[in-house]
Image 1 (cartoon, rainbow, N blue to C red):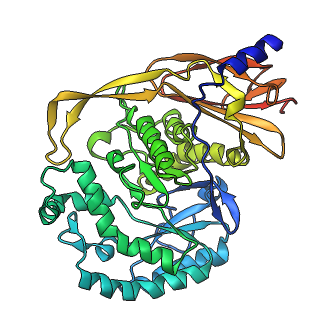
Image 2 (tube, rainbow, N blue to C red):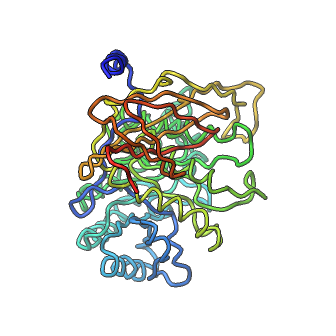
Image 3 (cartoon, helix red, strand yellow):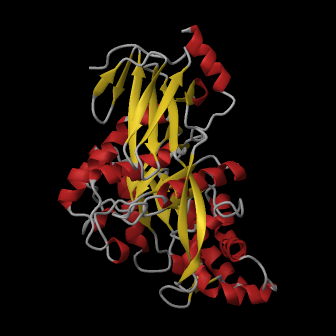
Length: 439
C-alpha cells in the first residue's frame, strides 16, 4: 500500500484528465444537458417522444420566428413544455434570416444599423416574455460561421483586412454580426445564456464574445480506419477554448442520426460507435450532450441504438455532476498523443491540397467524478486512436475501492489501488469504483 501511495504521489505532477468545468443551472439546480436536436415530436409539436424522455432527455431545442405567422404557435409550444414538462430546459433557436440579412438560402451578411434598430425593437418584448415563462435556459443559433463566410471577402474589404488570417477575420466578422442580439439577450433575459452551435473549430478560441457556452459539433465519416479522429480532436479544442476564454463549460453535439447522404451514404452507425461519439467528449470535460439529428433515424434505430446510449449517460448524471477527483487518479499514458496526418482541404473552394496537416489527439482521455451521495467514483475512459490501447490507472487512498463494476459489460473486479484497462480502437469504458459490491 505504501509503495503504491508513493508511486501515486510521485506522479501527480502531470494530470491530464478532462478539465473539471462547472455545469449550467436550470431552475436553480445544476443540469447536465442531455437531448437531441429534434425531440421527435413529428406532426404534433406539443408532444414529446416518450422514449426520449424515458432515456433522460432534459433539454429540447425549439424554434421561434417573431417575424412570421408561426410566432404564436412557437410560444404555444414553449408554454406547453412549461406546463407539461417543467423539468425540460428549452433552448430557443433564433431564426438566421432574422438576426442576419439573407441573400439566399445559404448566404447571409450582417444587418445594417437601421435593420438592427428595427429588429431590436421587435425582439426585445419577445425575450422579455420568454423570460417570464421560466423554462428557457438559453438561446442558440446554428453554425453562424457557415452562413457568413460567403460574404467574408466583401466584409474584409470594408475593414481593410486583406492580409488577415481567414479564421481570425471570420471570427471578427461573426462578433460584429452577432453582438447586437447577444447584448440584447443579456439585457432582456439576463438569466439566459447564448449557446450557439459552432462548426469550425478554428474559430472556437478566437474571441470570448462569440458565445457564453459553446456547442461544438463533429460528425465523423463512418467506416474509415482513422475517420473518427475529428470528434475527439474537436472536443479537445472545445475544452481548450473554454479554458482559455474562462467559460463555465462547453456542450457537445455528436451524431444522433442513423445515416445521411454525402460522406455518410449507405453506412449506418453502430451502437458501439454512437456510444463512443457520445461519451468521448465527456472525457474531455463536456457538461452536456445534444445529438444531431434524431429525425433522421427510424423508430427502430432510435429505440435500439440511440436511446440505450442516452440512458447510459443519464444513469451516470449523479456522478457527472459530482465532485471532480481527477487529482486522486493517475494514468500511465497521460502524456501520450496520437498524431493524425490529414490532407489539407480548402473550405472556401472545396478542393483538396497536396499538403497535409498533422493533428495530435490525446490517445487516452478520462475523467474521475465522485458521487457525494454514494461516495463511489466514476472513472470514464476513452481510447481516441485506431489501435488497441492498454493503460494502468492508479488511485489514492481517498477513492481506492474494494470493487470496480465495468458498467457496459457488468464485469466486476477488485481494483484496490489500481488496475489496467484495455480498450478497443475508438471505444469507451466506464467503471464504478466502490467499497461495496454493486449488485
